[in-house]
Length: 179
Image 1 (cartoon, helix red, strand yellow):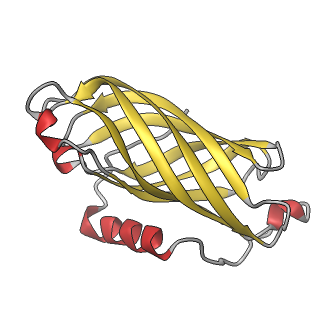
Image 2 (image 1 turned 30 degrees about the vertical axis):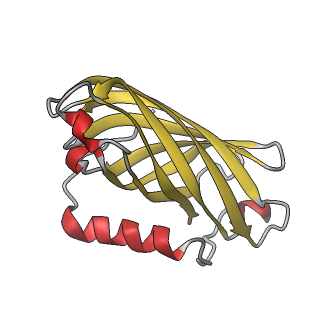
């Protein structure tokens, strides 16, 4: 697993994440990879639900991350129309910033799988509200070798829990943009 949250990309990175999520799936040029299906233009939009154990507070502490995603996809490969994912990882996390190592195991509507290891990212979390912009690489399964950006905005329904009890769940829109 190799997802590093918390790199200082600043406001520009957050703005890109919000714009990409708001725009939904877009067509990007396919990059040169071996095999016709591996070259498919592929973009997915949906939502993620991420749980933290223990819950996030204002103090950073070792935290386990689990979650899942549900996506609708646009692709030049007509067989790929949807995906579901399982997210797992952990690291030093708080309601202000996360620094974690995370992977996303994607199961496509075709039954095939992909494992994405996120190795670049920023997740500022003011009061538990996360603006996510991460990038990684498919390390196994379908689309191996492709880069993936996954912007999103996950929100907690009770940010006051950062001060008492801890934020245990954030949810919201997310995307998978393959290049």
